[in-house]
Length: 415
Ligand code: FAD
Ligand code: PYC
Image (tube, rainbow, N blue to C red; front, top):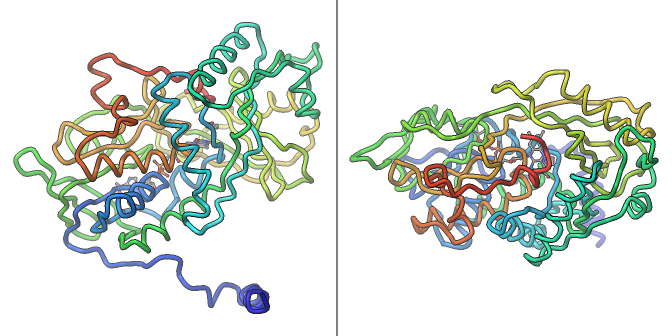
């Protein structure tokens, strides 16, 4: 106890000079069993579970920038599993169960906070859709409740629930286990744990091409040289289309900016996550006191991590209608990530037309919550060459067979 107090004071005064590195900065080797392209949460989780669950430790994660610098470090941290269709509900629920124990498992505080997530209904038809989703969730064993306007008012007294409001609140769905988890901690915790199991996490290493022999991938070209690999997993979110085109095929994916912003910090005022599909806006309060909010996607395609002004303007004016108390808040920062949207608002996890090359992408606006589950099933696929039953429905092939899984309603943020 004395020692930890002493070490806390010493480290507090040291301006980080004496802090050890959380993971190595290894030289890139000439070959690996598995190369993972993309050092976001999904790529790092894949590497971690490859090593932990399948004893595959000859693994490199190649990241063109820095770990967590993509959508993993840009999202609004919402975690939930209340999806409509069985296939999606199973995958997201599996992930939510992994979040439960992940801080302990990684020995890294991910600050998973089950503060409850409300999805508001503003019209009779929206309430019918919400009720359908709540019932479907319950049939899948997922906690989900239908709240009346009065119950919403009790839970979030600062919400404008007056009948004359511009966006009248008729009720909401509530997932009590839904909430938030701190995104940069997720990237760092997974990078450290994967590194500890022998995975090479190589930053500033961009993949620039794939090499093939007899229709099979044999390695990748990078800005640090060529690396041979028995299998390659691509987990590059908004850049997935670019990587697929390097490999010689197309994905049914569009890349769009998705924006978010935080206000100056204020005293605790909102202890649940509140989303509204109809107004394309959502908000929660961070542990630092900032109001963290976001909108639907910018409608145009693009790779600029900025977005256009009209989107936050619309979302903020709607949020102020819903929460008049926020009207004097000052915005501190705004940013965007590039999200990879699929026509059915569901991911693609599995084989591609190139043997040995697998993609995990298309999570769009909602992949953060799936980080551990996505890594877990993708590790299974990379280790065995087969889909796990949880990711089998999310094949690229579904766009040929027509077995789509339409989750636009549950995606929560407009695609
Ligand atoms: P990323 O974290 O983007 O990682 C991909 C990595 O690949 C990047 O680091 C990139 O640099 C790297 N890369 C790209 N090309 C190359 C290359 N050629 N070579 C090497 N590396 C490369 N989801 C939720 O569930 N809840 C939310 O509240 C939520 N809010 C969001 C808010 C915003 C503003 C945004 C932008 C997204 C939000 N999302 C949310 C979606 C979520 O962030 C993503 O689905 C998820 O983080 C994707 O993780 P990833 O690891 O696949 O991608
Ligand atoms: O998927 O829950 C979600 C989400 C909220 C904000 C952005 N994505």
